[in-house]
Image (cartoon, rainbow, N blue to C red):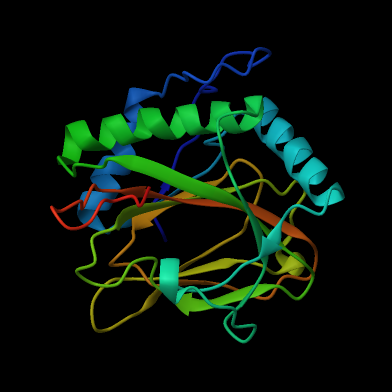
Length: 234
């Protein structure tokens, strides 16, 4: 059994205004913090309210219709490159100018504050993008941050796929931290489900999907600026 947190009330009542300053149920954020300090990961079903999920689906469809998503690479900054044998997906970064994206980022900001209060992680900012997987899309086993890099500390993956079945594939495989590397979960990317894990500790992969698959992966970062380097880059 993997640690799946129980569903609770919607985080944004009504959401008709898509309020970007979104409350977060304290019992839920506490449970996420406890899981991160224990196993290093957790799955939260129905974390996103249904109306926000629908609004994000609509936003993603509009982006696709305009051809805005770009082919996803691997690596960061100057080391970013395309590798179709490792990752087959396209992406579009989230911002605050769209109401649905802003509401989602508001929830993540509330989670950032909660994790900092509980775990003293010093999380400084959150970055995220839509990830569009075509039929046959996948992402091979990887870590979101290299050991000791400390640029991405906590990863959050939110799923936006209605009526997903086991036969649709595209499950997120999660391995535990440590040398034994045992598989501990296969998470179906059902709409509203969120997976949270330590970026430097938890290996994971996306199995090949048999239908279009939509997710929002994101990362809480620390500020690693020095006298010689500004983080994030200007």
